[in-house]
Amino acid sequence: MKFALTLPAALLLTACAGQQVPLWSKDVRTAAQSHHVDAPPAEALAAAAKVVRATADARDVNVKVDGNTETLTRYYVGIIGTAPVTITYTFTLTATPAGKGSDLSLSMKADRSELQDDGFNTAFNPLLDGAEVMVADPYKLFFARMDYVLGARPDWVACAAAPAVLGASMALDPLCFRAYDTPPAR
Image 1 (tube, rainbow, N blue to C red):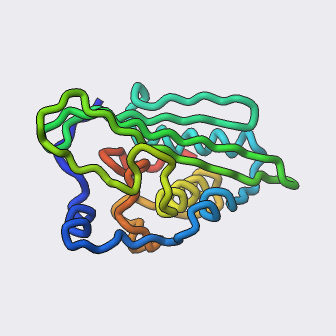
Image 2: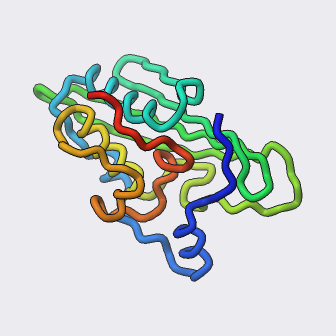
């Protein structure tokens, strides 16, 4: 398990300035449900598992496969501000056969629970807390990384490079908040 004391500074500065976090798309459903890969469902699900496993220690990632649906969970236990928290990121990917490949549908959830109330109001990304992730950025990053694992993209998009490479905002928490950022073997 990892411990931390920060939230991405750019997100805090954006929130303090009263500006909205820039998004790739206001239609998150398109970003989450319109990805096609030239790989059969089993291979697509294996690639998704590699993407999530690359973010954390093995003990902090859980993978459950049920037919053509895979549920991946990444846990973070640490400190935000002065409050101990547990954050659970859940990725649910369904791969439907489509010709020689697969059509993919992805949903992400982010849930935070404070382990104790210390009276300090901890900052947490309001775009991601407690429900399905409703911004396109982490979906785009997830699929870009899947494409890398499947050999359809030559580069692994690192969290720090995502704004320049993909035009992402800082709302990349499910894949980037206190996460490892090393590409997995293909």
